[in-house]
Image 1: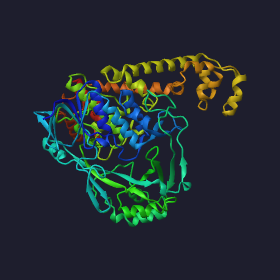
Image 2: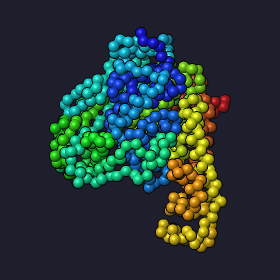
Image 3: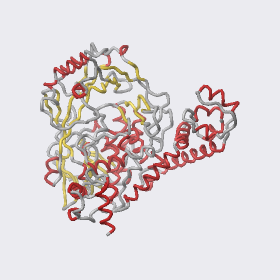
Image 4: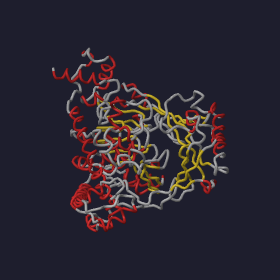
Length: 623
């Protein structure tokens, strides 16, 4: 028996790292158990962080005091702001990362935390006392007691890898899976299911003809994921990605090989990610398309290894190579390893509370792919919330949750515990009702003070935030009062294809023009430069401009969220016997009884519960 711990985190992927760091930084004596200490925060699939809605999650984790943003910045080899041609609610940062630097940076951070210990082993069972978790049992027979346990097992629960007819047991290629744990949790009463994901072939860059590809450079202006870093700050050499396409010859080879694909010969029956399909699925589902876009992405700052984004496959390795050689520029391709599919166990997340604590067993938390999600960012967001709540629960403190109008992490967790998922869940901006409130530029304004109150986000972070808010306010006040000189500005306005001024107007009116940005006219207003710090200037200007241009829309969203949040204040958990309310639909009675929502607001979001059912509940409560 090892020494006792406050919190044990099982798995050192993206969820496990954030969970362990949060619990340890809050003061809990924490143990992180991982199968391989050299694979901490491994980027199992593409070497990138962020993307549509995912970039917002990384910045939210950072605003809460997590580390995903810091690690991403320090391992970044290319930055792009996606959807920059659209409105600010859609802007999403994405970074290509050095896979090895990402992992080693995470390990260095975790090893610097005084409350965190490590154990290289796997967990096969848990220790329970009555209705509460009491510890874990490892594969080597070690029993470790703890007050709380967080399971972040990724794809390792009974993981089964497929490459054509070849099957291998593993959580990742060349890594062992975890057996017995699923079965032991089922004995307690947990329901499990199977999901599937996949990863593409890894390419030897020396074998490619890059002259035949379209180069994709990163943005000139680099916006860090961490609010503690400065705009434009980089730590590694920046690299290009490249774009190419499949063609009819590639498609024909893949079609002929479908009978050897586990996805189409009946070997795999579990559901894969809808929004990241294999190349086989693309060929079948979009049979009318003559080509599909592929991204050739570097795995690191100096390595020759490339990731072929868009070519996920479970086909036999020889068919993968045959198809690859028909892609222009891939005629002499050599691979480091083929793509593969992997099936693994997950636990439907409706078995969780919105703190990510399980309903069946107190002080046991699930985070990451074990909950049916896909993506490093979604995992990290769940991990930090689980780590926070595990610490708060064992210290008898109030739980920490985020509403749907406060964070994408709030949307993610509410979707999972309220609606569940029968396919790998991926976050999109379209899943959020209040996208304009949940922008990537204001995650710190939304979350840092909340986190600081529970002791996670540092006082230094709050000071940085306070300075930022003051600078934004001062800039908006200046723009509101300042005037425009037509003689000085008209030549610039003409270049920007904007109507010239016939008389002096307030600067605010000019900035409200869709085609005019503050940075376009900043050289004419030295006061604006004086109002913003040099290293944070772009961030201040961007935030101020959004608040000016979208003021009316932001205020409307705030009013709507306030109305909806009134339903969140009506607590109903464990207060209603739904089976007795015959005026509810049969489906509503079943779903409400199963999920036992905390509030009327959560009840309204359950699939199968209609507005009429909600009215019945409100009338019932009024009686």
